Amino acid sequence: MKKIVFLLVCFISTLSLTAQEKHSYENEVRNLIRQDSLIKTRKDLILFTGSSSIRMWTDLEKDFPNKIVLNRAFGGSTMRDLLYFANEVIVPYNPKTIFIYEGDNDLGFAHATSEQIIASADSLLTIIRTKLPATVKVYFISPKPSIARWHLKEQYVQFNKDLQTWIRKKKNVYFIDVWSKMLNPDGTIRKDLFIEDGLHMNRKGYDIWRDTIRKYVK
Image (cartoon, rainbow, N blue to C red):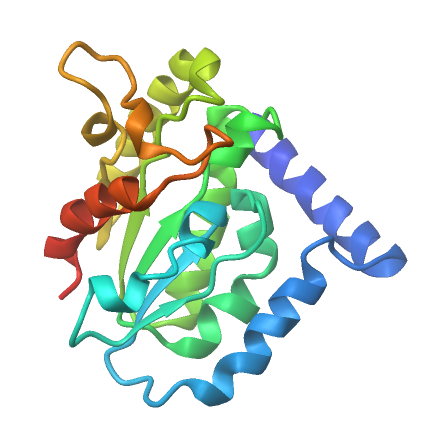
């Protein structure tokens, strides 16, 4: 029942937003779409999307050489934002594989619950399954730990568990754990992986992501 109520609220708010004003990321998404003419081929395309941790991965193509990878992450988006723009930043590219990074901002500043985030993820997956082939593999990258949001550690840990539980019930959907890879052996956060804001990663952080995700980029 809570999930139904949440989805209804999302639907109503989306209608209201459409009628009254543009989404805050509208211009950024439109700018991304304008770059589509630069895409040399869409055959076997591997799509990365989500929030700023993906958006700021400027070496994405270099990190996965000989693969057709495309970055369509935007802003400091949430799972709900990605759901809103799914028909713009996911569906048109007909990717064979999709990597999604959301949940970090949902917990960090949107104050969404695990149930609410997963409800949005479920609706997002429904769009993917309805408009793209059933063979498309979808990978959800776990929210990462960060210095700036370490005080929310328990919420992140619980969400990652809840996300894994939800994913186990889905076909061709997978969970990628970057959380544990960014911690010291004693469970504390590796502070050397972040830039000055304590939230976004430096090259060391992206090296961990590259090495963790590489085996799934096929």
